[in-house]
Length: 107
Image 1 (cartoon, rainbow, N blue to C red):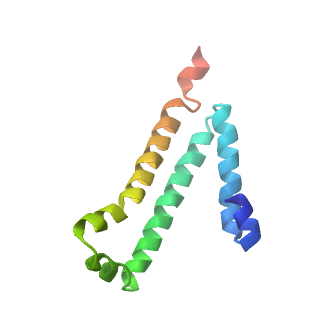
Image 2 (cartoon, helix red, strand yellow):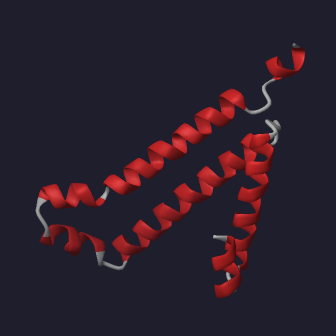
């Protein structure tokens, strides 16, 4: 993501990539602030997906596309996004449970 941002001159993707690298460093060292970067990435990922799908719906491209296919294929179309959200939710759970909790500092 970080290298792609440099090639395409998308500065915000470079910022997100750098923040993710920072979050990884904080997660490895179990810093308390790392979980907030994980939450921010989850929020950005969710917002981006909703923005893209919303744009496809408002432009009139998604609904006709889904109506052309069978119900099974329409459902299968959204399984990768569903898995992405499950993994994102799990990352938030792990961040809230294990990154720099106060109980770790009391021992």
